[in-house]
Length: 189
Image 1: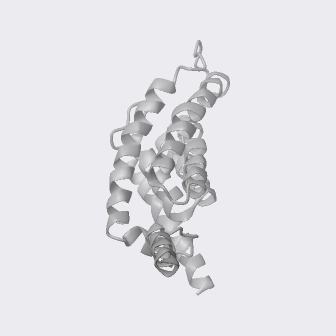
Image 2: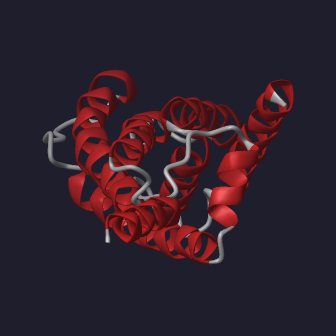
Protein backbone atom coordinates (compact mmCIF):
# COMPACT_ATOMS: atom_id res chain seq x y z
CA UNK A 1 0.00 0.00 0.00
CA UNK A 2 2.85 2.41 0.86
CA UNK A 3 4.44 1.83 -2.55
CA UNK A 4 1.09 2.46 -4.26
CA UNK A 5 0.56 5.76 -2.46
CA UNK A 6 4.06 6.96 -3.41
CA UNK A 7 3.37 6.18 -7.05
CA UNK A 8 -0.03 7.88 -6.86
CA UNK A 9 1.56 10.97 -5.30
CA UNK A 10 4.08 11.18 -8.13
CA UNK A 11 1.33 10.75 -10.72
CA UNK A 12 -0.81 13.41 -9.07
CA UNK A 13 2.19 15.76 -8.91
CA UNK A 14 2.94 15.17 -12.61
CA UNK A 15 -0.70 15.83 -13.54
CA UNK A 16 -0.81 19.04 -11.50
CA UNK A 17 2.44 20.25 -13.08
CA UNK A 18 1.09 19.54 -16.57
CA UNK A 19 -2.21 21.25 -15.77
CA UNK A 20 -0.37 24.23 -14.29
CA UNK A 21 1.70 24.70 -17.43
CA UNK A 22 -1.33 24.36 -19.70
CA UNK A 23 -3.85 26.50 -17.80
CA UNK A 24 -1.47 29.21 -16.58
CA UNK A 25 -1.83 31.30 -19.77
CA UNK A 26 -5.60 31.47 -19.13
CA UNK A 27 -6.60 34.82 -17.57
CA UNK A 28 -2.93 35.81 -17.54
CA UNK A 29 -1.75 39.41 -17.60
CA UNK A 30 1.88 40.38 -17.01
CA UNK A 31 2.47 39.87 -13.29
CA UNK A 32 -0.98 38.37 -12.74
CA UNK A 33 -1.65 34.65 -13.08
CA UNK A 34 -4.70 33.56 -11.05
CA UNK A 35 -4.74 30.01 -12.44
CA UNK A 36 -1.33 29.48 -10.85
CA UNK A 37 -2.96 30.06 -7.47
CA UNK A 38 -5.62 27.45 -8.26
CA UNK A 39 -2.93 24.83 -8.90
CA UNK A 40 -0.85 25.92 -5.88
CA UNK A 41 -3.77 25.63 -3.47
CA UNK A 42 -5.02 22.37 -4.98
CA UNK A 43 -1.58 20.78 -4.74
CA UNK A 44 -1.05 22.09 -1.21
CA UNK A 45 -4.39 20.65 -0.05
CA UNK A 46 -4.12 17.34 -1.87
CA UNK A 47 -0.40 16.59 -1.45
CA UNK A 48 1.00 18.93 1.21
CA UNK A 49 3.45 21.83 1.42
CA UNK A 50 6.61 20.14 0.11
CA UNK A 51 4.88 18.73 -2.95
CA UNK A 52 3.22 22.11 -3.55
CA UNK A 53 6.64 23.79 -3.41
CA UNK A 54 8.05 21.25 -5.88
CA UNK A 55 5.01 21.64 -8.15
CA UNK A 56 5.24 25.45 -8.20
CA UNK A 57 9.00 25.29 -8.86
CA UNK A 58 8.62 22.86 -11.76
CA UNK A 59 5.76 24.83 -13.31
CA UNK A 60 7.73 28.07 -12.98
CA UNK A 61 10.86 26.63 -14.58
CA UNK A 62 8.91 25.04 -17.45
CA UNK A 63 6.98 28.28 -18.06
CA UNK A 64 10.19 30.31 -18.01
CA UNK A 65 11.95 28.08 -20.54
CA UNK A 66 9.06 27.20 -22.85
CA UNK A 67 6.99 30.37 -22.71
CA UNK A 68 9.62 33.03 -22.04
CA UNK A 69 7.91 34.08 -18.81
CA UNK A 70 10.13 36.25 -16.56
CA UNK A 71 11.29 35.01 -13.13
CA UNK A 72 7.92 36.11 -11.75
CA UNK A 73 6.83 32.57 -12.63
CA UNK A 74 9.00 31.34 -9.76
CA UNK A 75 9.05 34.17 -7.25
CA UNK A 76 5.32 34.63 -7.56
CA UNK A 77 4.43 31.01 -6.88
CA UNK A 78 6.80 29.17 -4.55
CA UNK A 79 6.12 31.12 -1.35
CA UNK A 80 2.35 30.88 -1.72
CA UNK A 81 2.35 27.19 -2.59
CA UNK A 82 4.43 26.26 0.44
CA UNK A 83 2.64 28.57 2.88
CA UNK A 84 -0.72 27.35 1.60
CA UNK A 85 0.21 23.77 2.47
CA UNK A 86 1.63 24.75 5.86
CA UNK A 87 -1.42 26.74 6.94
CA UNK A 88 -3.81 24.09 5.60
CA UNK A 89 -2.09 21.35 7.62
CA UNK A 90 -1.63 23.55 10.72
CA UNK A 91 -5.34 24.38 10.70
CA UNK A 92 -6.19 20.66 10.54
CA UNK A 93 -7.40 20.78 6.93
CA UNK A 94 -9.40 24.02 6.86
CA UNK A 95 -9.65 25.16 3.23
CA UNK A 96 -9.80 28.88 3.94
CA UNK A 97 -6.37 28.67 5.59
CA UNK A 98 -4.96 27.07 2.45
CA UNK A 99 -6.32 30.01 0.46
CA UNK A 100 -5.01 32.47 3.06
CA UNK A 101 -1.53 30.91 2.80
CA UNK A 102 -1.55 31.45 -0.95
CA UNK A 103 -2.75 35.04 -0.62
CA UNK A 104 -0.08 35.92 1.96
CA UNK A 105 2.69 33.85 0.38
CA UNK A 106 2.18 34.88 -3.23
CA UNK A 107 0.16 38.08 -2.92
CA UNK A 108 2.47 39.70 -0.40
CA UNK A 109 5.76 37.82 0.15
CA UNK A 110 6.20 36.68 -3.46
CA UNK A 111 5.28 40.11 -4.77
CA UNK A 112 7.80 41.87 -2.53
CA UNK A 113 10.58 39.39 -3.41
CA UNK A 114 9.79 39.78 -7.13
CA UNK A 115 10.67 43.48 -7.36
CA UNK A 116 14.40 43.15 -6.58
CA UNK A 117 14.64 39.96 -8.66
CA UNK A 118 13.14 41.75 -11.67
CA UNK A 119 15.38 44.77 -11.06
CA UNK A 120 18.71 42.96 -10.67
CA UNK A 121 18.27 39.94 -12.93
CA UNK A 122 15.76 41.11 -15.53
CA UNK A 123 16.86 44.76 -15.82
CA UNK A 124 13.57 46.47 -14.91
CA UNK A 125 14.39 49.88 -13.46
CA UNK A 126 12.56 51.93 -10.85
CA UNK A 127 10.44 49.20 -9.25
CA UNK A 128 9.46 49.77 -5.64
CA UNK A 129 9.16 46.78 -3.31
CA UNK A 130 5.38 47.12 -3.45
CA UNK A 131 5.17 47.33 -7.25
CA UNK A 132 3.80 43.81 -7.81
CA UNK A 133 1.64 43.59 -4.67
CA UNK A 134 -1.61 44.89 -6.20
CA UNK A 135 -1.36 42.56 -9.21
CA UNK A 136 -0.25 39.47 -7.27
CA UNK A 137 -2.75 40.08 -4.48
CA UNK A 138 -5.64 40.44 -6.92
CA UNK A 139 -4.56 37.33 -8.83
CA UNK A 140 -4.41 35.27 -5.63
CA UNK A 141 -7.86 36.45 -4.57
CA UNK A 142 -9.30 35.37 -7.94
CA UNK A 143 -7.40 32.07 -8.00
CA UNK A 144 -8.08 31.45 -4.32
CA UNK A 145 -11.82 31.89 -4.84
CA UNK A 146 -11.79 29.42 -7.74
CA UNK A 147 -9.77 26.89 -5.72
CA UNK A 148 -11.99 27.36 -2.66
CA UNK A 149 -15.14 26.67 -4.69
CA UNK A 150 -13.57 23.66 -6.45
CA UNK A 151 -12.05 22.08 -3.34
CA UNK A 152 -15.12 22.97 -1.28
CA UNK A 153 -17.28 21.01 -3.72
CA UNK A 154 -14.89 18.04 -3.50
CA UNK A 155 -14.93 18.28 0.29
CA UNK A 156 -18.70 18.54 0.49
CA UNK A 157 -19.28 15.30 -1.41
CA UNK A 158 -16.45 13.48 0.42
CA UNK A 159 -14.14 13.15 -2.58
CA UNK A 160 -11.39 15.34 -1.16
CA UNK A 161 -10.86 13.05 1.83
CA UNK A 162 -10.99 9.98 -0.43
CA UNK A 163 -8.34 11.48 -2.69
CA UNK A 164 -6.13 12.45 0.25
CA UNK A 165 -6.47 9.02 1.86
CA UNK A 166 -5.69 7.22 -1.40
CA UNK A 167 -2.53 9.32 -1.70
CA UNK A 168 -1.50 8.46 1.85
CA UNK A 169 -1.69 12.08 2.99
CA UNK A 170 -2.40 12.78 6.65
CA UNK A 171 -6.09 13.61 6.85
CA UNK A 172 -7.90 15.29 9.69
CA UNK A 173 -11.47 14.15 9.14
CA UNK A 174 -13.70 16.61 11.01
CA UNK A 175 -16.78 14.41 10.69
CA UNK A 176 -14.94 11.61 12.50
CA UNK A 177 -13.96 14.02 15.29
CA UNK A 178 -17.55 15.22 15.65
CA UNK A 179 -18.77 11.61 15.81
CA UNK A 180 -16.18 10.82 18.52
CA UNK A 181 -17.32 13.81 20.57
CA UNK A 182 -20.96 12.76 20.23
CA UNK A 183 -20.10 9.20 21.28
CA UNK A 184 -18.10 10.46 24.26
CA UNK A 185 -21.00 12.67 25.34
CA UNK A 186 -23.45 9.77 25.06
CA UNK A 187 -21.30 7.50 27.22
CA UNK A 188 -21.00 10.21 29.88
CA UNK A 189 -24.79 10.65 30.10
